[in-house]
Image: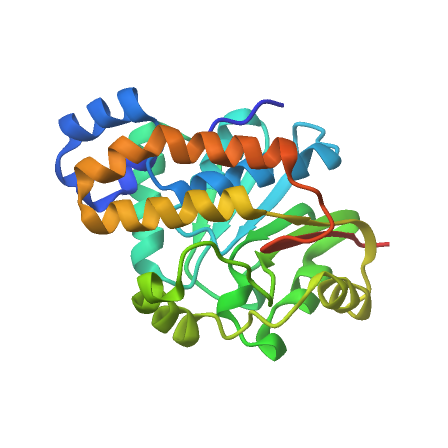
Length: 266
């Protein structure tokens, strides 16, 4: 299975959907323009190679955001059923618009908490950089466990509780203020996340670190470039994407700014 990413950005990006012709031109030249999301996808693409897909799978994208992972999987697995869930109705409206314009037929969207839905018998569920926005006691591990089939897998990727940076913190004060309010669930290191999975009844099938110094450097350059304006953001884009791919090749998995665990329901 070969995943592509970011094809729906022209339908979900505020700037691109307001200027569709310019958005399509930018996409054809620069590809996906959000470096943080691009880096997440490179990890996701590697991780799902550890999951066996039949082609008719029942899959949940938990905290779908703009639906980029759901759309990618729906395109790669046209006979699968993809559930894209987010409690933000505005995001789901954007996802609905994107899947309609893209002509995708196998995604069902939800703007609700998972326990309030009739989703069941899942083969695979995943949540990429979502649980850090949820208080630990409210993270829906138990609900996902109940919704999975026996033998089903659950993937969670979140930021490590300890972060290593490159440039001085003073350049990112606005972002740090946002993190303090938003990342109420950024409390786990890798061992802690594994323990949480096991406490909820999962068997651990994979646990790893990702996002080393080169990925962090890419994000910091992209963040600063975006603050300087669109032109600077686009100029730095090929370099930052290159740093991410270099990080994926060179980073030693003994630590990382991100952690990810895949659990299996017995």
